[in-house]
Image 1 (cartoon, rainbow, N blue to C red):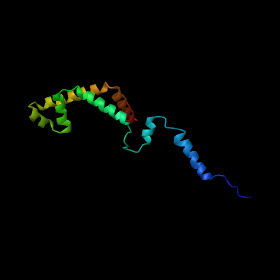
Image 2 (image 1 turned 30 degrees about the vertical axis):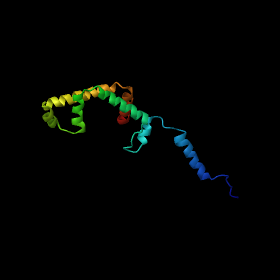
Image 3 (image 1 turned 135 degrees about the vertical axis):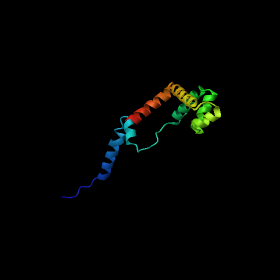
Image 4 (image 1 turned 90 degrees about the vertical axis):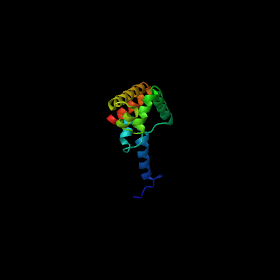
Length: 131
């Protein structure tokens, strides 16, 4: 029996079949599946517009703080001063500084939770970290 000649390479057909019916014909059902298949510690993709909206929401939340609160957050979080160092600078007891810090962070949290963009982003992260 003579060998039959194919008009195409059968090996390339297998590759084309897998390519057509894997990711392209059956897209991932949810974002969770995509995240589960992503390599560990891969950066979450976000558009430039989303990033700008998130930054604007954070700036709006900071606008609700007065100068003393902004100074305290800057000293503790960005300058990395200890409570004792802030106590010496402000002449306030260390426990008062800690309570003010906690109050300011709660105030920021409430202000951020008002924004729908932040709520959507947090719900997405909650799903990402819970699953």
